[in-house]
Image (tube, rainbow, N blue to C red):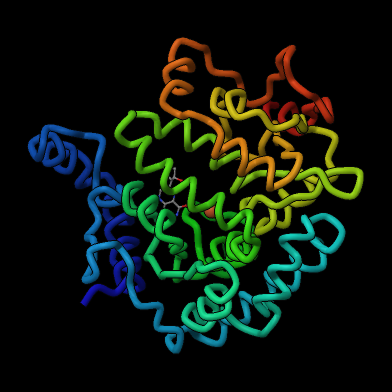
Length: 326
Ligand code: HBI
Ligand code: FE
């Protein structure tokens, strides 16, 4: 049987072994012979087993979480909720209430899905980690949100590479209880499936990154955070909301699609949408094929740059980036 937890232990053992260098050369050879590619290995989602359901989903098996794992969720939940009260978008906070995420422990996806589905038609499905783009987009296009079933380890409460259940469920799911945002996510999934054919995944990924993951919204005469990468992170909540370091710029679809991003540090720039209605409308009104075509001969914009057309809300001091650079 496919067991992600057992799999992870094996992976670690293999990694430790490979880390010793003994097998590196052999592995390189193997990768060059198989398919002639050195860029993919079994950590690449493309190479993973699609699982018994063929769509990369697995049973969550809620009763298999340990009490320590539930306690870890509770710790993260309480820490974030306290911080988010005055910083998160009201739509996010309403989602947390509506879905009763304050109930103790890691949520049971089936029970959570029943509440969510009654509201916006979305369900949560369990996945073992990152899954291939086509499968990810297909789930979103059908109003299913793939959520990692595992929770980060006690030693990694503030940093993780793969989305775990806290990032995916606490970070993403509350916004899916908002009818406008729920439609936006489905539109993104549908757009993603089309973008695969147009070779424009990188463009669309930037849109996802700067809205779904790291978006801010105009609210209450200022800005509030709603991106899952921010609201699920203690450090980035403070950074994105309060810190003078990053730029905060009015959202513009083409601008966002030209903008690089950091995956290893806080964002040097956040984009602020006027409202979720506006964000959805811009997505629905845009004819993506000509937009991608038009962008193909334009230069990328650096993650920390501003350009003359920007609606700059906060001009960042970039003190954080400067500190990290020394
Ligand atoms: N898989 N489980 C999971 N979660 C993601 O956020 C995710 C993914 N696969 C692909 C992907 N994201 C991105 O490539 C797209 O949003 C662009
Ligand atoms: Fe995410």
